[in-house]
Amino acid sequence: MRKIMLLTKNKTSTIFVGADMDIVFELCNKAQAVVITDKNVDLLYGDRFKGVKKVILDCGESHKTLNTVQYVYDNLLKFGCERNNTVIIGIGGGLVCDIAGFVASTFLRGLSFGFVATTLLAQVDAAIGGKNGVNFNGYKNMVGTINQPDFIICDFSTLKTLPAHELSNGMAELIKHAVIGDRELFYEIEKEKKAFLDLDLHRIEPLIVKSMKIKVDIVTRDETERHERRKLNFGHTYGHAIESQFGLSHGEAVSIGMMLETNLSISRGLLEKEALKRIKELLNYFGLPTEMGRINRHILMDAITKDKKKDGNEIYSVLIKGIGNAVIEKVSIKEIRGVLYDMH
Ligand SMILES: NC(=O)c1ccc[n+]([C@@H]2O[C@H](COP(=O)([O-])OP(=O)(O)OC[C@H]3O[C@@H](n4cnc5c(N)ncnc54)[C@H](O)[C@@H]3O)[C@@H](O)[C@H]2O)c1
Ligand SMILES: [Zn+2]
Image 1 (cartoon, rainbow, N blue to C red):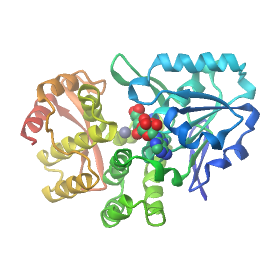
Image 2 (cartoon, protein in one colour):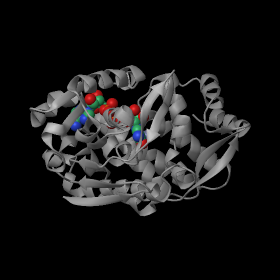
Image 3 (cartoon, rainbow, N blue to C red):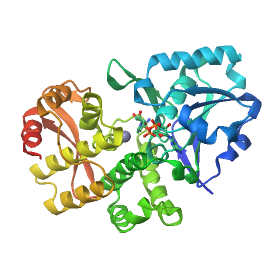
């Protein structure tokens, strides 16, 4: 086990990587803990958290709502939680982390909290960085806060029970970090791609940790997303529109979103076609879609033009200036339309 520290203005979060999830009760008093988890994770790992106050959520993105938040608040009231004697522990994937973080940040104006991240996506991405919240009126992550957890535990053994498509979702974010911030890591993932499919933890752990560190470093420099943190939105501005309109999983939608921004980078002359081919092949290797397929371009354009990252007739996009180097540029709706309709 090793520790990575995430230092922001108001908080130091400790990330325990390669740790056993049982260390959670060395970090906080069992009697003061309230575990928030979901039904699947509870079935698999609930035995490890016996005798703890627990709120079990329904699974799936459709439950990432204010109704679910209210359901958790109700339970916290029933448990008699008070500000100074409660630690919220989210045990699960990104959904649980986002809700647990939001509940902890708002209930009684803020409780201590930490995560045990049990999906690859949560380990490399969702659990890190303090963004938490829920969807609202069909818009992704519309209501939320930025507030860092006290601790994050990444127990990589939990990846062994993860369904293959959830592993692919995580790979999308892992590859995203390499494309925006570390060319060497991209090559290493290419080299070790089979080890990822085989879940050869010994080989892939160092690469997972490198991916986490890219996010940690960016968040450390720009917690509130004024400048550099926007790079982490690679694939997401358009991916969110795809996810909400066409019911694809987060990773699948982000994968197509990344291809759209990669194509935009090519049309601006920032990137070689060879790089696009490599990104596409790596995403495809993990079963991630990279083509528009059945996605209706008219509906997508409509959703894109409503996006919150829009500035007049232009959208802040994350473009790639060679693998490992991202830049933020405004792209006109016309340019996006052109590239979108040219994509397969
Ligand atoms: N806050 C952020 O910065 C941030 C970043 C990226 C994504 N997100 C959010 O994260 C969410 C997606 O997270 P996710 O992909 O982890 O999805 P998820 O939390 O819905 O988990 C996916 C599925 O895997 C199950 N599961 C979790 N751990 C398991 C395990 N170890 N073994 C078997 N099954 C397991 C869950 O029950 C669920 O059915 C989205 O809501 C997205 O918006 C947030
Ligand atoms: Zn994401």
